[in-house]
Amino acid sequence: MSKKSFEIEMKVRDYECDAQGIVNNANYQHYYEVTRHEFLESVGISFSDSHDEGIDPVVSRVEIHYKTSLKGGDRFISSMTVERKGVRLIFSQNIKRKTDHALCSTATIDVVVLVNGVLSMGNQYDKVLEEYLKD
Amino acid sequence: MSKKSFEIEMKVRDYECDAQGIVNNANYQHYYEVTRHEFLESVGISFSDSHDEGIDPVVSRVEIHYKTSLKGGDRFISSMTVERKGVRLIFSQNIKRKTDHALCSTATIDVVVLVNGVLSMGNQYDKVLEEYLKD
Amino acid sequence: MSKKSFEIEMKVRDYECDAQGIVNNANYQHYYEVTRHEFLESVGISFSDSHDEGIDPVVSRVEIHYKTSLKGGDRFISSMTVERKGVRLIFSQNIKRKTDHALCSTATIDVVVLVNGVLSMGNQYDKVLEEYLKD
Amino acid sequence: MSKKSFEIEMKVRDYECDAQGIVNNANYQHYYEVTRHEFLESVGISFSDSHDEGIDPVVSRVEIHYKTSLKGGDRFISSMTVERKGVRLIFSQNIKRKTDHALCSTATIDVVVLVNGVLSMGNQYDKVLEEYLKD
Picture (cartoon, rainbow over the protein chains, first blue to last red):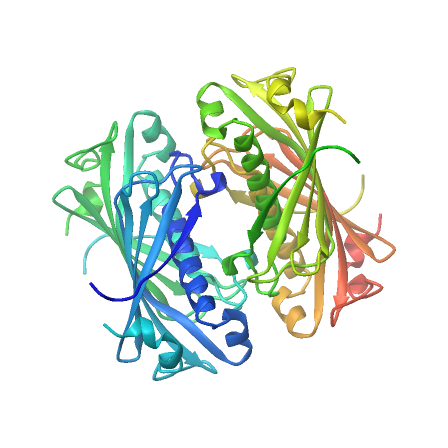
């Protein structure tokens, strides 16, 4: 409950909708990724610098629930918290439509950290994420 | 074990890779969707005709595991089985690299069927899917 | 020179980069589309409402020049002017990197307006675009 | 007229359509890119191997005309010829719907070749492209 969360506001782009007139499912995964990368940037971690140093956060599992569909032009709030379980960083994320706070989607994303391609202990980010990792 | 499966061969397009040089996670969701739509077409269900008749299969939940990364130009086999649990059609899918059969990803996708926007019993397709639904 | 222009600030999303580590060419077309739709919204034209009324602005031709590549996380300014030539609305657009104003791309996009699928005179928007259409 | 052409057959994926129910414009650029990469592969040039050797073919300009819209599930033939003008490789491409050969789109794509990031004479591929470059 008291975990520190991070959030950004985004807006659906028309090309992200498919012929059903709603945002295509796979694009929510893009929204969730953008949110995590913005989060990492906010604590001083550059995704591309990390990559150049041989450190690659990699998604090992996603679970996404779809509840209310977003449409072209909809504004929404994408928020997340993060915790560490063993070698995994686990992101709990959700997306709410801005106008009425309708819950559009929830997700749990497991991330592991590869160092030069090898699974690591995942504690590289413990220091910078400290404020977010504690309960 | 004896469930009837459906599979197609696909090939990674270079633009589907991201700066890490591997297929971006969200694109696996696209691959899985393409596979289900090809499957539906193979049993005579047109996704767009269905939509015009007010019948929309909608994904309610996805769980995707990422194991081995695909790269630009890789060929892969995307296969699936389907079963019905209550109102949900549950697709068990996976993607294997063609050259060495390495398991790249597995997924469980829950689909419900909306009729004019309202959740249905999901039995519209029982007849055409008969061969695939039985154990 | 004195034409009124419209601009928005955007930021590259990491998944928009390809294996070359730069934004994939096709995504500039997305950026340009987002800019035009934001522009239309700013003058009170909803893209999806238009569609529901049978009025569809359709791109008939694009010409895009690529000059300096954007990378993951780059902020950029996407700006445009619009003029009318016969039945066509012609958008002159460009993208500049925010940090140093480097010109990344320029584009000319021709749009025609279909009414119930038939090419129209394209003057539906003359009134709302008045301020932008005049020299 | 007598120039040697290269072609592949592709099929529209439903997620490539937008809310207008037709393939989003930017996706044609993807189709054209896939075709060029398949072409390069057919003459023995690997896009990613090239990149690793510091040789990057880069698009400097695209001009795309849109004529007939493709819809979900449509099969189409994407074909191309290539010529060299100074440092540029110029690809003339088009897309035709398979069922009735309707011309959906034409494109001219200018490509230059960067070697370690610097513009080259673009003659790296003259030998392997010989058959296609001659009139």
